[in-house]
Length: 130
Image (cartoon, rainbow, N blue to C red; front, top):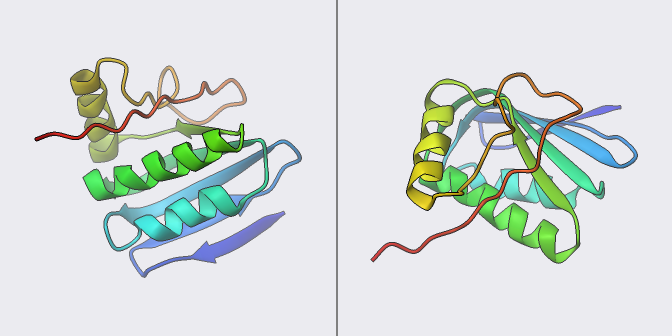
């Protein structure tokens, strides 16, 4: 079952509910204006694993990345997991840059190609830079 969840005009979130895994497909731009909607969509789903398909994400900034940090923190508190898959272009470059800066920062599945059932869990580590 696919249930549309429309956030601010720059982003659309489609949720495919499964028994143990749900997939959120994000289309558009994830930034300060849309981050709360993305965090809410990740956390409100009750699946054990929440997979976020970033294949159609056209823009991701640090505020948007913060949506994943907040969602991952809450999901881990509930003994659930968040997986990021499919990032390409600019969003992929930001995730790669953060991963290089953090050492083991976020990974977007092993290849960050199209999402698959074998997608691995990302590790998102927030950092405060002073």
